[in-house]
Length: 469
Image (tube, rainbow, N blue to C red; front, side, top):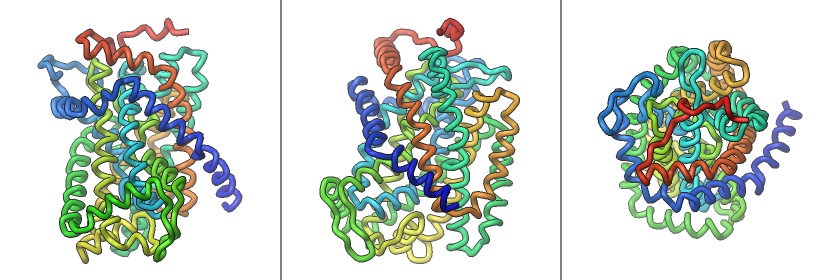
């Protein structure tokens, strides 16, 4: 295990080095500038489309949808994507970023989100534009398909590389990391054994996952809004109690984003590079902009318009990081617990508990459990589609079974190694996707111009992909 940890540690140091941070932020910034800040300017329109997209049977202009349009409503596509992003990254990830990078890391999480909105928009536009219909009649899409159909078959190896890393990464970020974090929280808060937590999550997740995207979409469409709103309201209650410290918290975030933080209490201190590195890395881990995961869900949406789904998709990054992660960060920074050397979910739990004694710990543990459950069901779909791309439609059920069986194993495994593995494969997924986004950016820019000029835009299934060379 030590040798494996050492190998993954070395790879992680390279793939999450300065080059990856530049690539992630650089591609996002390029897309944001190329779109003339449209994702930020049209945020209100995105929320309007999301609200209209709750109805899976009708389009925003009142027309009736058919099954040929997709499998789930645009709203449920966003909720499925959010189910996979709102997870341990919002609770444990934010705390880890602050513990290792200082308060300044929060600023760099925000920057990652603002450029990431353009990235997520482009991903969803390309996912719907270049999606296909598989042998079962279901829509499939995502980076592997927009690489194959957008860049041509000579780039098929890059799509295959993404699919391989995605299928493996799902077992890390979307499975074992989640079950492990929940098991740890349940054990420390309620004294429940890790193996029992793993079995319960496996049973609940299996019941949803084995039912496919329609069942996943229905569960996510109900569970994500309820739990997300409950967590945000709990955080706001803590901030009302700590209202006098909010100004100082913001001051620390902006000051330490550009200045090194000296050691204090149990906090070891952090250089500016650490704030940038952990802020960007944990921001990406949380909102997944650039990883290429969310467009796999958006490709299943009942929509004929790639740009409209892109406007809905970009909300995922805004909601996940600008709203949910910021609430967590402010709760931590308005308490004094973070300087004591705590990290991960326990830091968030202690910060909530400092304002709500006896309740804070339970709130975080329950939120973590629900968020992790929705992340597991969302990522099962991502991994399944990657596996399907590599091995065909018949392989889907095999992947679902293996994915469900891995849940209790993750609950009992070593957390440090699991986080390291998940972090590494996240970066490996991002590289092929970011290359594709950069090369296909002219398509995104043109489709966006056409949409806002009132022109018709064809979705992927109405394009002849076989003519690609």
